[in-house]
Amino acid sequence: MKKPAKKEGIKEPQPSTEILYGVHPVREALIAGRRRFESIVMARESGSGPLSDIRAAAAKRRIPIESVSKTHLESLSGEALHQGVVAIVSPFPADAMDAFFQKGVRAGETPFLLILDSIVDTHNMGALIRTALCAGVTGMIIPKDRSVKPSPAVSKASAGAMEHAVIGIATNISTAIDDLKSAGLWVSGLDAEAEKSVYDSDLTGPLAIVVGGEEKGIRPLVKKQCDFLVSIPQKGPIDSLNASVAGAVVMYEAVRQRMKIE
Image (cartoon, rainbow, N blue to C red; front, side, top):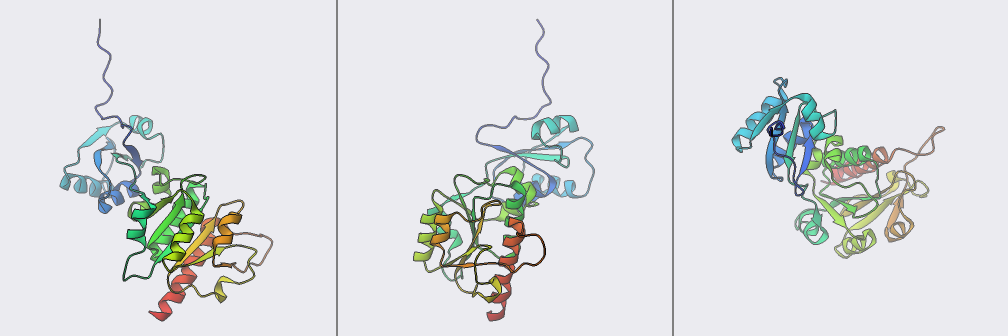
């Protein structure tokens, strides 16, 4: 009786690991140093450039690298846009709220937080996380339910920025907002119906900005918890901005105001 043929020699992901795919997510996860790497898998046909940087970083950390066919890489990642590399890694280190407060609301630093209420589109979540990192946001909060999680797909959509983000998972967003307010933060919600423009609002000081879901915006109970609501002036036939674009506008208005008083 013949033994079954062996699969290409890579370790299959275990329940405590996940598949991170794409050049930027894998490279940024290596730079951030927050995940445990079991192995990195590359296509045999891989060229030089960014993949060479990944090989060098992996060698310094003594992370094993396996070479397989592109077809096998696609079956492993379940994603054609793997760019020739995947990594078997520990899950993203999201924090429970107690731990998040120690990182996102640090003593001696003015908190600047982003609360993402029911964002369900992977690309919106990735874009918001990337913009938040560029804008100097110190931490992000997402709900445990009814929301995209910090997954490999979100890391890919953020071009790897998620690997550097401080993200807290809240069982109840309203309770988290109460805790932030008790810690001295002002909480501003982005609402298309708000009478006050974001450009006429004070976004300096300890601040958390709430961006709502793609279809219904901020949930009513969460909206009631906000200290004040702001809107973005709009002209033309389209009545709303994409969630990630709207979030970017408000975050960078806050950046502009904060830079003026630094």
